[in-house]
Image (cartoon, rainbow, N blue to C red):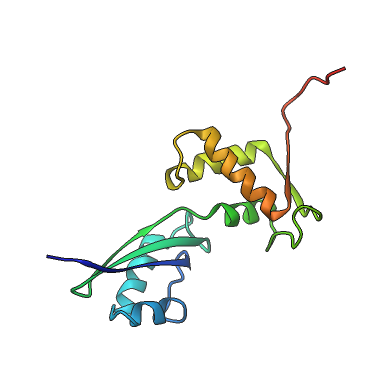
Length: 150
């Protein structure tokens, strides 16, 4: 019977797994064939959908030195960075705002990431993303027409 001896969580660029850190040392320390993992991961992610996108990967390592891995969807933070074409968030998010994102984009991210999040409603996913945006120093602009209150 196979028992899980370790679970690793790594962030790997789609189609670009190689034995250098962090993959090599993480897998090598538990006796996993590093090149076998890299080949399998690259085969699954070597397409336009995953090309050069940093993907969270959960690797289950069993007592017989075999492994299984699950590729999750791109993190909310990295998805936001790609949409806004930025490299990092604000050093002082409450004081320094570094960008704006459309509410429509926030909804798209929520729908995209819904299966990985710990929520059942789209509104809850949107709230989680709004929290991430605030912590990065990014405002939300609402493009929907609103009536001004007078």
